[in-house]
Image (cartoon, rainbow, N blue to C red; front, side, top):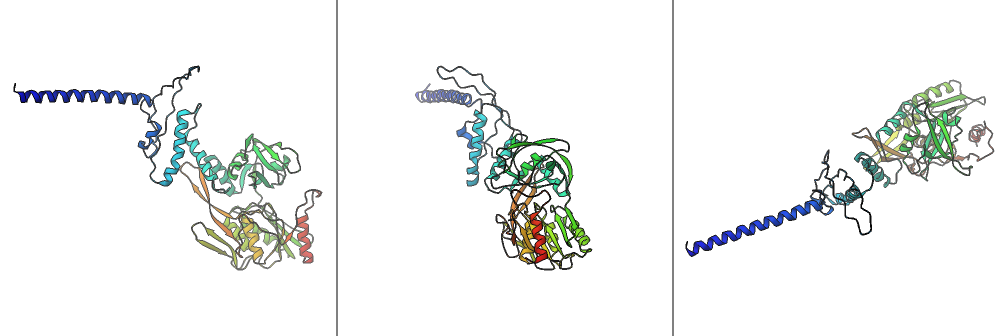
Length: 446
């Protein structure tokens, strides 16, 4: 063999040995990394390589070896590693900020000692938490069961305790109206009571719709409320048996003093039709004036608020609705309705909200009626509903209402022309100081 050939053979053999050593070292290193990362699960610093979308059914990760105990510590039994959800790769600055959520959830999955909730439960909780940052009690996520319960309101019938509720400034659920003869009244609940817990579950700080979903339930079932009352030293429990309820919507009578009285309890789908029928019955008896009672009315449908207002106005603006995208819609009255000429007084209080404030504000600004009673609630926002893929519902505050004189209702409420505060004590069972003041105003003109 020539010297040149021997040199070539030596080079080839050397390269072959070097390649073999490289492969062995790489294999050993890869195997160590594989074992150190729990049998193939990527460590936190490698999550940028994870898929950008969540898999429908993530593959189960092999069980990781438990860490070695520190000196003096007893060894612990290994616990199975849960199915891990891979971290998505951020595509922009917003996603980069939200990546912290996935970073936290990844660490919880790897380290939490105990059972982890399902991803649907985590998703619902994350949505609730996200919406709470908006500072708006009316933008809310309704889980499927709650959404189904709330949808009953449109029918005028539901199963529950027989009370209208709202959220006060402290995040407590306040009873703003009690159905006469209903379960709540029979159990001793009063208007103004605040509900702190429902069956041992705190509702303080929850959205209005969550609280309603807990309070409502099948007829015949019992619910225990922890109630706070102004004149009571400590909260107390009240157990109420739910019933199938039909909202009366309207109540009217012709008084012996020649004044017609009509009350509207809520602005559900039949509201304007029932109001028109009641007004026709009263006007057929030729009253000297009408007292329209909106106390404790929590509101309802916008179209019903417009139609009810129109019963008393022959023309003019009823309200302005302004949307988040800058659009504005003006609602106006049309002539030809039943009660456009009759003298009118409207009763309001702190439970008069939403659609009630639209009606009262329009009649006040158009100088069509005198408002008597108390400062109204101040709920003048529009919630746009979205039905989601799993039957849940998202309600987003997308617009605000303004009176004909461009007064904001939301967060402001309406001040009555004649203020009559309900006495804190000393009121006879059948007495109604606000109604009595309305009658006096009609009879004396002041």
